[in-house]
Image (tube, rainbow, N blue to C red; front, side, top):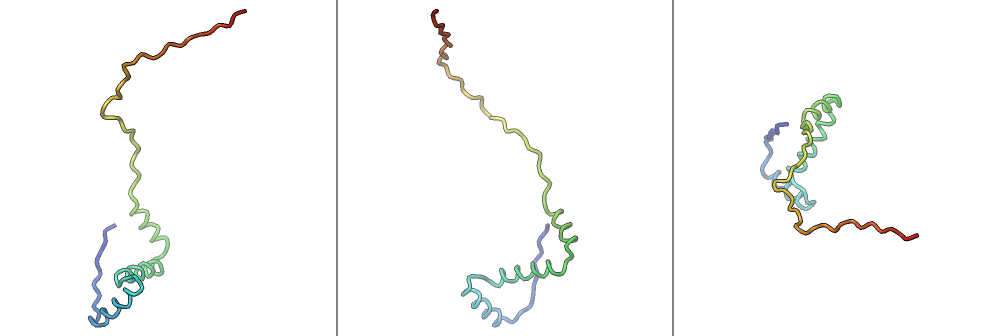
Length: 90
């Protein structure tokens, strides 16, 4: 699916303070906003619609192809030993 950017006006000093506080928790305003927006989506959009959108987002599986070697395998020039049949005496 195509991604969109959302712009939200917010007081600069408040954003700076929020960013400072979140850095102490090893996170960011961006990460927290993405998490909250995902939770809002899951709460407000009915499950059948979410499943439909998810099914459209998954690419169709590609047919499997066999990979052929570009160069033929080299054959050994050494002769293979012949099989020897051993008969036991009576």
